[in-house]
Amino acid sequence: MSSFSGVDYFDLDALLTHEQKLVRNTVRQFVDEDVLPIIKEAFEEEHFPTQLLPKIGGLGLLGATLKEYGGAGIDSIAYGLAMQELERGDSGIRSFCSVQNGLVIYPIYAFGSQEQKERWLPKLIQGEAVGCFGLTEPEHGSDPSTMETVAQRDGNYFILNGTKAWITNATLADLALVWAKLDGVIRGFLVDKGTEGFSVAKIEHKMSARASDTGELYLNDCRIPKENILGVEGLKGPLICLNQGRYAIAWGAVGAAMACYEEVVEYAKQRVQFDKPIASFQLVQEKLVEMLTEITKAQLLCFRLGQLKEEGKAKPVQISLAKRNNVAMALKIARLARDLLGANGITLDYQSIRHMLNLESVYTLEGTHHVQTLILGQDITGIQAFK
Ligand SMILES: Cc1cc2nc3c(=O)[nH]c(=O)nc-3n(C[C@H](O)[C@H](O)[C@H](O)COP(=O)(O)OP(=O)(O)OC[C@H]3O[C@@H](n4cnc5c(N)ncnc54)[C@H](O)[C@@H]3O)c2cc1C
Image: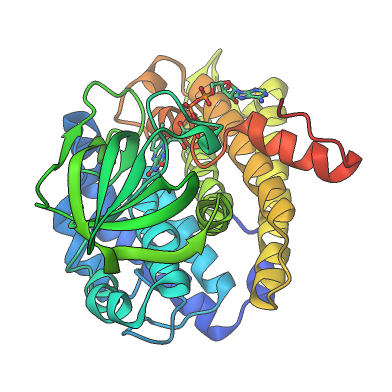
């Protein structure tokens, strides 16, 4: 069993089903036994720990909410709890799974042809194939509607040209879902690794998400069969996928915050200054109280969001609110924890700085904090303030 007892001040466990607890506890144990012992090295050496892939697939963490094609068919709350536990290990592990799930498996399932589904879903779900999602470009991040990547028809083929940047799983991927404009309309295209005219390069020297594989995709007259297009048109295609990703992030951020909180509570009780444990000082206790309060609020938010999602009622704006709140909350907690760890807190011997650095990426990716704010502002006022 996991040595981590969780942070559950309001007894949310009492609201979980047996299956939800089982999933959470299984992933918790996986993180303790398989992720935590190797994550420092993976982060330091800047690589995704691919040795975890068979177990990630075997545990049913890929395509987890699907009942077909070999998916585990777990519910939305169980899935959220799994993402929470994975990010308690590291954002890189959670983002590997949530990109594969929400941004690759989901669009193929929702918008793919029968042939595309049969070809890719079983392998992606088993962890035998890896996928990536190419939306962002070097010059087009928050505003993907202005993307430059284009597709042109050529008989029974499409020819793709363009560059995608900051793509999670890029160099690991057997399959890239590339968003490009066809006759001025955004469409999704499935590009196999090894296709002529398609290449990838790893982005080096990241100071965040170091245990995640991030790269660029280059499409130079890349010719793909015309069957490789997805059946969705316009920006809504990628945006629907991002809702899936943001849902996983909202839960994952709670896991990162829990890891920092647990680490710093233990440390504060042990660390003696001015003849007393630092946990005995009011200024320190206030910070711990603040952390626990914010984690508890975020957990309740996730739980309710999970219920809504399960009922098919979660609105994209509600998912945005949860992503925005929980990532900002986790980043603040990671910084507070790093502070209370003193100088020790700047080393990778403690988890908080790794989470703090990772969360800087999570704050930016899948819609920055500002972008979530603008989405919510528009919903409240009916006035868009993007431009
Ligand atoms: C580790 C990592 C992994 C990623 N993985 C993927 C992936 O798998 N696939 C993918 O397609 N992309 C991925 N991304 C890219 C990510 O989605 C983008 O970084 C994000 O959308 C922001 O785009 P940008 O970095 O170009 O920043 P910009 O859009 O240039 O934004 C820069 C700043 O300007 C602000 N800003 C922009 N517009 C406005 C506005 N209208 N009002 C107020 N402020 C504004 C932003 O909030 C931000 O603070 C990843 C990024 C990272 C860091």
